[in-house]
Amino acid sequence: MKRLPVIIAALLLLMPAMLKAQAGIDVSRFQDSINWKRVAKHSKVEFAYIKATEGASITDPMYKYNVKKAREAGLLVGSYHVYSSRTTAYQQFANFKKALGKTKQDLVPVLDIEATHCHKLYMKRVDKLLELMEKEYGAKPMIYTSEKLYKTHFNIKKYKKYHFFIANYKREPAVAYTLWQYTQHGKLKGIAGFVDLSKFNRKYTVENIKIKKKAVEAEPAEKPSQTNQPAKAATAQGQADAKPAAKPVSKPAATPAAK
Image 1: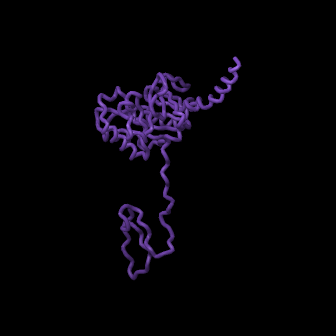
Image 2: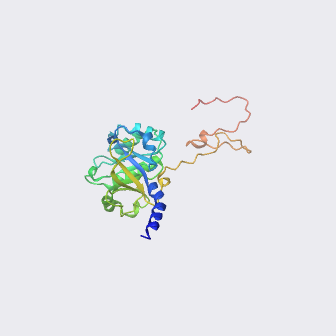
Image 3: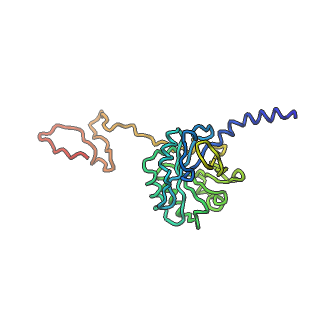
């Protein structure tokens, strides 16, 4: 009994970290119409991953609504694509890119790989889809999968630089993970049915899965020069598109049409 105050003190110290760990949800049309303002009031919820697409032709009908309302409520938002073994990486990427359009993405995209959607997992196709997503969004996608599929296909050196989002509803994953989806039966005010809940590995925070903003070139379009050198070319055509320094001529040259 003398140890009880010590145990209580330890739990009180751990409580903020425990609350912080329950940091996110992922949703799709199966959650129907979500009251995102109510969801965002939960101190445990920092972000939402929202289903965008599946395979080469399926678009989640609630995607754009969910992204818009979740961001308006102040949550960080990311999008996920459910992989299909029935179509090519290029077709699936085209579907994902079209659905996202110009929607604001705060978090790295997620490639969702589940046994129910993979009659046979072609790893070259998976790799190509990961490559296309990284090139488009400027960050390595996070891979969502089960612990079993991780051990079978991803537990090798070439995937060490990826973040993994592991689903295990019985215990903490015994593999390297960034996010752990620990239940399919979470309950939150603002969502009528069940919702998937996730928490971070203690080594990571939401900062690790944010899309880093690209550095903006600060150089102005026209920059005064102290030399008589022509201005630097601003397009891929090189110096052909550069504006030469003005010099007096006896007859004005024809002005090219504006591009």
